[in-house]
Length: 265
Image (cartoon, rainbow, N blue to C red):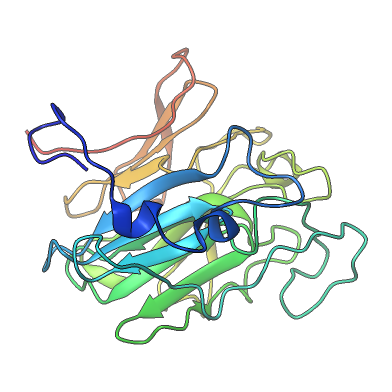
């Protein structure tokens, strides 16, 4: 943690010195390459002392006192299935299997709604979830995603004016986890009703494309209609100026893009 624009740093001891730190953040069988990955920090806009961490293999953690004390926030989330030959279950898509990745929980991206901060969305290695605080149990909301598409991905994005709307960019979740668009059909999937129904938004994307994205690959502006931006590891930037109804490539041939953010100028 830094309080002087990064000139000096101190350890967040409430997290780093947690008694079960190694158990919570490392997979004893395999482990994330180069160690556990803390890839996301979210701060409650109403209270800077209230923060969330997300770790690849370590789940979601919450602090109410600016990092002095932490507790896991993983209730309701399915655990990663380590057996690729395991039969489908209530916690798995109909035809998809998962390979060993991290520990029990693998949140890929967590979002806090900018206007209603008690509403949270999560794209997990094991599904798509929604949480409404002060509840502590995540609700799985991906049951009506098309079975051939599944519910695995890295990115999830909310709508700044409507907490019931969310978008994901699914990835192939077969036994080899290629992490590309399922069946080469690149598409954003959107829900308007908290995950009860999902619709495909693929107009403008190539008919065949093996796109891959990272955790922070989608962003929105605050315009009306909403502008959406999606970046690929292949160095492409895609944009929709009509809330996902149609997508256009606006930049190509860049190096691998990890994340995108928007700012009004």
